Image 1 (tube, one colour):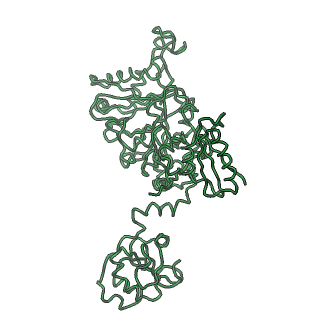
Image 2 (image 1 turned 45 degrees about the horizontal axis):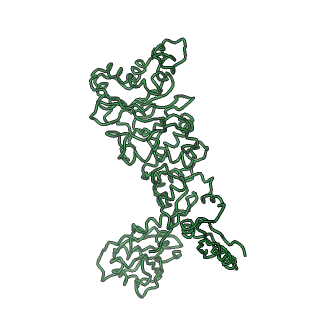
Image 3 (image 1 turned 60 degrees about the vertical axis):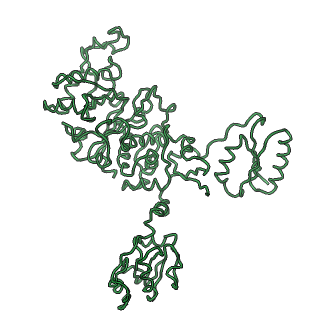
Amino acid sequence: MPPEDGLVAVVKRGCPTCHLVSPVLAALPGLTVWSQDDPSFPAGLDVRDDRDLDVSVGLDIETVPTLIRYAGGEETGRTVGWSRAAWRELTGVDDLGADLPEHRPGCGSRTLDPDVVDELLVRRSGHTLRSRRVEVAALEDEAEAMFDRGLTDGLPVVTPTPVRVLRMLAGTSHAADEVVAVVPPNLVEVTVEKIAVNAVMAGCRPEYLPVVLAAVAAACSETFNAHGVLATMWNAGPAILVNGPIAAEIGMNSKGNVLGQGNRANSTIGRALQLVIRNVGGGVPGGVDRATFGNPGKLGLCFAEDEAGSPWEPLSVSRGFAPGASTVTLFAAEGPVGILEQLSRTPESITRSLASTLRVVGQPKTALFFDATLLVGPEHARIYAEAGWDRARVTAALDEALLLDRADIERGAHGIEDGMPPGPEPRLPKFRPGGLVLAHAGANAGQISTILGGWVGGPAGSSPTTLEVDPWR
Amino acid sequence: MALSSVVFLDPTDETRPAARAAIERPRSLDGLRIGLLDINKSRGDVFLDRLEELLTGRGLAVTRYAKPTFTRPMPPDLRREITAQCDVVIEALAD
């Protein structure tokens, strides 16, 4: 505890400026000296031991020496390093340090040493963490321990130690105990802290956390229906498309190999969401996850839209969000199907070509069944840009080209027993209104677009769901 | 170098116990590695000494373990050692 009235100095033996001022300290009446590294320094003074740094943390010491004056139990002034004028003013001793140089900068406080920062973080804030502590024996490999307890998706995870979780929580201003969503299938309330624990495991950096939080909230919304996406026998899992400035801030990939490996943010944000569904929601393959095949993207699929190179407004803006807002759009996605189309040069031709492959989503004889996301590559998007076709026009043209003749898709047509039942409409749309989402992504080189087939669209299944990221910062 | 244990935060909804369930009781001890655990309650050693005599008399292999004190949970490293070295463990519980 600091004194009611008087002076407090915090020093360490490892600091030359502290050695310089030690004769001055000896000359100051009513002084309490705390040492961060060695209570036998400065010699000849009654020095108190602050090797555990509790006092230094409490006094918010960043530099040694620090001299603080108290009056009536309150701090009334402090100075750091050695400045003859400042020390004389603070102490009221006019001839203090007459034989010392006028000024000497101090040294960094031990509280800022990299080897103690983590420990201090846990000591200061560890009590705020509510999650159960699980102890792994020293002889047990911690990576193996996570597998043994069924906590991973089949790949190793980063062990969510208290200090790592505390560092992760620095990525958001939200309180650790705030409930973010109710996670299916077990309908468990998930807090910011639990999401942070799983984000650590997934390999996220703290600055990704707002994206993960928004993604969990969006996934657990009524419209996205994560329960259905999890429980279906279909291949799809949750995919996350990121729009807005956050994508560049955290270094996300929207260009070459956009759906592939190699980018930490892309690879870990989607994984964090899936770990939350697994660990908090209890959604595991063979349990509520009844996928017949699944797809590799169920380890986590997250990517950014290439806005800078896009001929269109960001997808988030088309979906009603303000330009400049950062968003996540959740949609159900199975494995990517590429469309190689190298000869079309008109918007009409490229549209017919893309539509012909979009017909295969689900099965070529289904209509009004599954949703799909079409990632238009830059070389294909350029054809639309040169023709002045915006996203709405391209989407409408694709929907028009995907009006399927019932005779082609009825049960039995083309010698295939499956298909649509008989009905009055001569033509049926492949996708429900809003069921086909277009985004711009991929490398500049390559006359390729890519389909991410979805799942049953609309209220009976899952609808693409967009939420803002910024409220989760 | 001293070994130290790692503590992690439970990523689950915490409805399941952190410790895992016991394995099924074996039908026979033949060929199994048997641990005898003294939890440091008085006369536990008497009971376990007699058990060791009886078991080794049947040609079974036993290894002895002891908790530092019965008042606290078993150190995780001892638990790990026993799980690595034994198929079954017999614990002397009460005095």
